[in-house]
Amino acid sequence: MSIMNLDPLSMDLIHQGRAVLVEVIASGTAAEREEHLGNVTVAENEMEAETTKVYSSNFPTRRQIGALSNETGMTFSFTTQSISREIRAMATMGLQSLMELPAVPDFQKEVGQLVVGDRIPLGRRVTSVEIGELEPGVDFTMVERGEVVLIRNVPAGTPATNLITGIAPAVTGGMRIAMGQAANRQVHLRLYGIEEGKEPFVMDIPQGTIRPSGAMGWIGENDPMDAEFSVEVEAGPDGSFGTIRIG
Image (cartoon, rainbow, N blue to C red; front, side):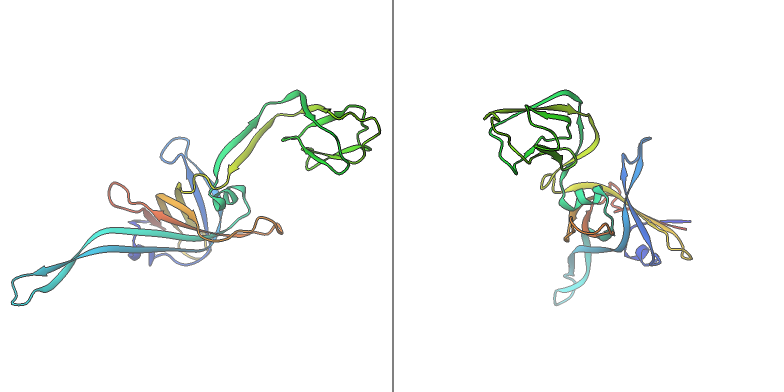
């Protein structure tokens, strides 16, 4: 097994093939875990270095005798196939947060005059819905996973103000994405080479700023979708961008 710093020379030692990308959560702690981001179809590291030319004054004519490397930068670009909600959130670079809502056994929403064809959003799933004297399934139905009331008929004598009541179950394990917020997200990425018959490798990028660099479909078939990203890799305290473990 060989462990090397991430640079163009070590990248040349990686055999092309199938690879899986994960995001490392709570890295370096006892709670560390890996979140699968998808099968990578394209990945590349691009390195560039800023240099300062060095001249000598020991010649009759000022002559360049070399160059000193200053700042070195690395960009890791990849395309991954996935339809996971994590990839969708990253594609919009939205600020992610857990969505937890307590149960409301006496859910109520007051609305005005009912009109046939109206869709009344309740903001969450509600069961056992009642609207005054209206008959469920005849005068109104629940649509959109039970989160919206569709008015199908308004009987004569229906008041101008109506109260919708029901039971709202608790919501756990949901995700809320505020699209366009937290556009630059710090990530710890790990790429696993899993091509059968080729020497396996693990490329570890402990810190980088990820940005979307391509379009991703949101509505379509349930096939894996390509999502393109670019990561501005940041060097650690020792100047290393990451490591590659081969074998």
